[in-house]
Image (cartoon, rainbow, N blue to C red; front, side, top):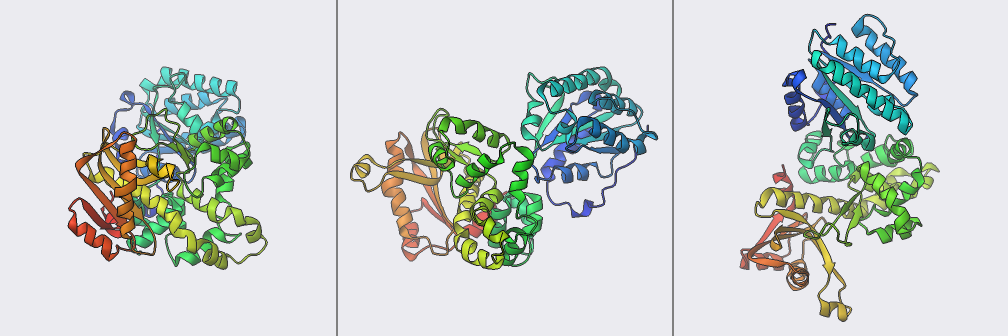
Length: 487
């Protein structure tokens, strides 16, 4: 069978993903008998379908799409999709037979074969999944070396796709792992070329690097866009996170409560448990499931041991945090007719800088990794205040937005402010008098030439400017300038 060249009508609309496409092209150039298949996965809306279609454009390719029905129904639909390529409708008894047909049909010509929704072909029980994977393994061992097929399997069920890489999985070692992550700010800017960089970052902080959300939110006045695309009960993103969780999880209500508890800021497990009404022990499986879906992650203070109990949980998905903070608590009223524009003006716009500030802190840490080669370990730090401050009940804990370490030595610290006011001198004084001394109390030390980076959306007060002029270790950088340096 000679596979026809695939033509994707939306190829001119594709934006970004240069590194990802380069990796796929390198895989394509490898001789089929010398390379593994490709296991491409990531959460819904991250852009997998657009990526593999852009990659397939102009190549001899077969695109097969499975859906959430029974495996038998899936195989019937797959047979229908194969008919134009084979010239007849094959009889496919099981997923192993599908792979046999694909390998045998591509012996004479090089071809890309993409199977999207791969987990839907495997069954719903552990025994069915195991049997399906074992049958695929047997076919791969028998037919791969005589075929010119490059097979890519794709899916949004992250835990199941990750399990393909497990040593206990029958397909271990037969597919290269490729996790598709949300776009970073640098690439996301291409969706918003007509906006200035501060406006771009606000949109990115809401959309979270997800191509579909970026496309939906990238143009027009921000308040009107949020009202018409997210807040209005008939808008395309009004129920998006709820649909995501319901499609992936059996008990979405518990997960909704957890994500709502993580919406404002990173939180320790005890606070989450109290908010959700579960014990910390019973909460653990829910958090691990969210971590597998890339919807929750656990962070530690920079320099902490992996066994530290100081960890906090956070939601790394900016759009979900936005939705759970600004839409979810008001959904009943919005569905009952509350004005979406007034909701944005009264409940979102005044607090949006608080939401954006967490994203800004994260990109500042990325900027430090990019800029400070001496900082081998970069992250936020938090811990106890100085002992005498705690004893006097003046201060209990300290937190620094970004710290770069070389072993246990501090080489750079940074504070980031995304507010409408100029950063005051107090930020520098707190760093010098309380926060860095608290780190020293915790066992860290500062290099003699450590740098203090202060970055602000709205500039700096005269007092802070004067302090910076007097000390070469203090660097003031406008938020727009820092964002423009991100890569």
